Image (tube, rainbow, N blue to C red; front, side):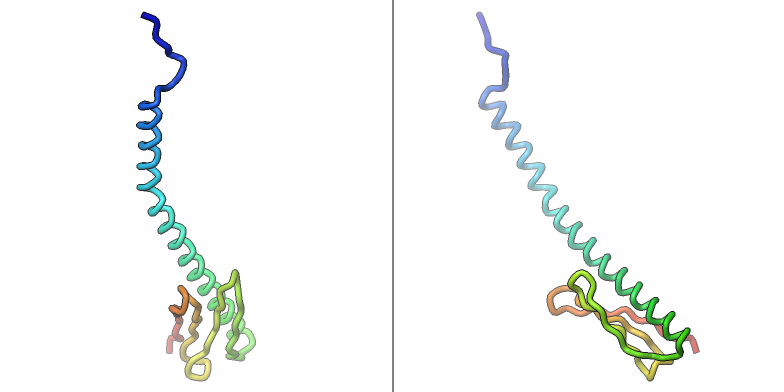
Length: 108
């Protein structure tokens, strides 16, 4: 008997579509978590860069001045504790209202 073999039948299409949906359902949460973790690491790297620049400037000029800057919508603040010779910290907004701090202390 003649059989039409020019494409997919409806059940085959539904099975293939459900497989694609299951794969997407498994990987989308992973991708969302990966993207948020990448943003968090990028903020930490920018804080470390700002801290390094501030410490280098303080070494050259011998002036321990608090600075702040905004990069990609995140505010970074360089704060010198103990009058400048003790500890330098950069504070930034990790999430909405959750502040993170990266510090370096002088050997003494």
